[in-house]
Image 1 (cartoon, rainbow, N blue to C red):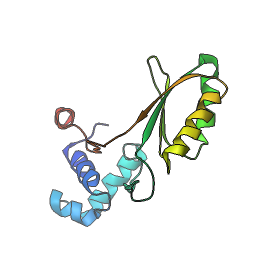
Image 2: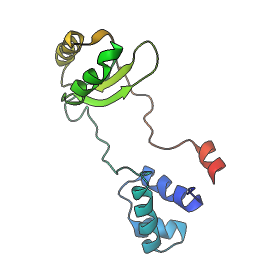
Image 3: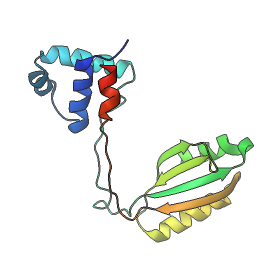
Image 4: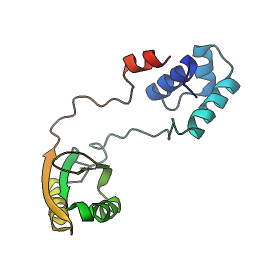
Length: 155
């Protein structure tokens, strides 16, 4: 089932403010709040909306800027490496990728010293062949909105 224009409008409103009430969305879209709630539940059931989350200012919570670690693992041990990484505290995001490095990890740590210790542990992990660390100096853009062109084509 394709998403229609109303589904896209609901998604757009929730991307702007995940706490926006169904009645507020309904007023903007000119539908009832019951209709918006039903559509929202349908979008959740289909897996289009996975969750509504708070966006945290990690700096104010005492964490350094995010650090990305690219990992090259032995292909036969990649699943084990991923399983182990999923259990580590500082890991915010974990992605299996294509290219020279086959794993990308986004971590946040309270200090650069913690980052150094963490990366050393990664390097010593069974199956890890090589790592490349990228420390974010300044976040330039962080958007949860969707590109407009693909949305317009699907409507």
